[in-house]
Image (cartoon, rainbow, N blue to C red; front, side, top):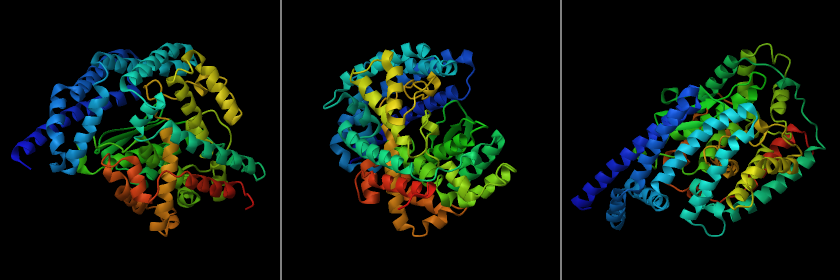
Length: 504
């Protein structure tokens, strides 16, 4: 490499590092606004978000960025891997974002910041009408952005690709059809089985008990508390500022300990992923998850594959029972485990069991597709939501907080995100299938108090790469296969055969 190209490469990386520093500051503001900002400070904080978002956007589409891309692209084969992939990612963002006027993007950033605050208030008041005007504006701007970006077969494909590169409506429709059929068939079969007794879960556990137990599990999982923290919020989330500062949140309900316990395990999976990015990716846009689906595969691996397994509770149930005395004194391990895996129709996505969870995602996916393609308007969303729940799960929400207002995603403009949750389950199941072949004593590892071997396997195959690899590349390299929902269906059949004592 000539000295001139090397110097230009270093200038480019310094420019990118400045942009990433602003992004870290913006994420810190988002974390603060979602974890208890004083009500009277929310409006001013939205203005801060607007300014930071506009500055980041300008750096992504500036003439200086265009010059770096033009000068370095002919020499990209001479760059090291991180610089080359960073250039490719910046080029992708430049091509996408330069099509949106900066003022429109800034206005959109302020809109979603305001919308998240109003969403919280509307949710607390069970009043969709308060939030609907904001959502109407968000949908309108998203539709306009799609026109700027362009699309081929389906407008929604453009949004999918931003969260899951290479994913399309055509692929998802086929995968979801297969999942829906398999889940529906299994639910029918389970009616002939033995429904577990839910009584063991009808206990009140103090917040401090739930927190103590969950923090112990987080440590076993490999969450580094010197590189992260746990806070309270309305809607649980994880946010990475850098690999040394990854924060997770949860919502406690003393009458439903499962929500916080499994929620913390879930968000912990996200955090462990980001804490184990290769340090050489720091200060670049590669220090992120490969996709939202791969990100969700890590959280769902810990929550569903590990944390909801019988082997996991062989060890951890003793600890929970001791902390919760005398709540579980007369409850056997098997009765407790079967109770935690009861499958039933429910209204709240984050409280859904593993079997019905994909149905919650399919409902949102279908509504989002319709909204972005102009086949559904926000004014009709409440009824459409309720109709879908009745069709898929046989129940209708009676209040907005159990229906269209339960998720924060649309307030943040995150259309195209929800399918990643279901894709994450599929990815996680495929990773687990391969992991079992490479770690023959995997059940014993899960039943122990040390999950180091599991975390190291995930770091080796997934975590370290950040965005160096594309999602389907990680899946192919790790499992030797492309997207395959069969492993998830096999896992569901095996688990619920045990929980519901089904005959083979």
